[in-house]
Amino acid sequence: DDHKHVKLLLFSMMTEPQQKVSTSQLALVKMFLHASHNSTSQVHGILVGRFSVGPKLTIEDAVPLFHSAPTKPILDSALRIIESHLCGSGDELCVVGWYTANERLGDDERPGQAALRIIGGIASRLECSEKALPAHSEPVLALVRNSGLAELLCVESCDAQRAIGFFQRDNRKHWIDPVSEVFTSVAEEGSKDGSWKNAGEMAAVACKSDSKAVSIVDFEDHLDGSLDTIRSTDWLMNQKVVDFVSKNG
Image (cartoon, rainbow, N blue to C red):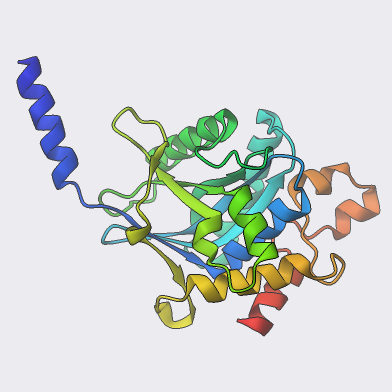
């Protein structure tokens, strides 16, 4: 019976459709900016987007949260604010994943334990959600690869795909199974597949720009500031980054 169960499990894994992952230039630029502006620490944030039949996951935006180890109370607070913001936007977007960058240069093989715990919690929230999702949809965990990001900033015309990796749930329900590059793409206006090269060039320009001109702040910055800073901190949208991508896209 055990042998038969294993065979059935393997068969289901082989026949289950592979979810495709498409990410916008805006989300990529925000993730890379967040990591490059906090190059000596781990970073974490939320991925926002939508699931569609295919299955396909489209990442529309990234919301930076932490530049240190996440804590559950602050994470729960941030998630509530983000979900409330999404409900009021009318775009039918939802939390579709988590992104992270590890602290050490070269530590690019797999996400850290904090990110692995958090993506499991996001999956549980989606499973308990009243919103019906297409079959075989599941959140994704993105890892900004520090070595690839360093290369992106030092070498002209670098492929952004070298600086980002996506992980899906394996058969033991851990998000350590890499999504093949064949199933990942860059989304541009009109739902056409974009170019990793173009996205990399845009991200490199953003990361090298004056931090005041193309600034990015996370939820942790928002909480650490004075009252006036808290009122003015644009951690949910980071409008300066939105404007930069819109102008250069």
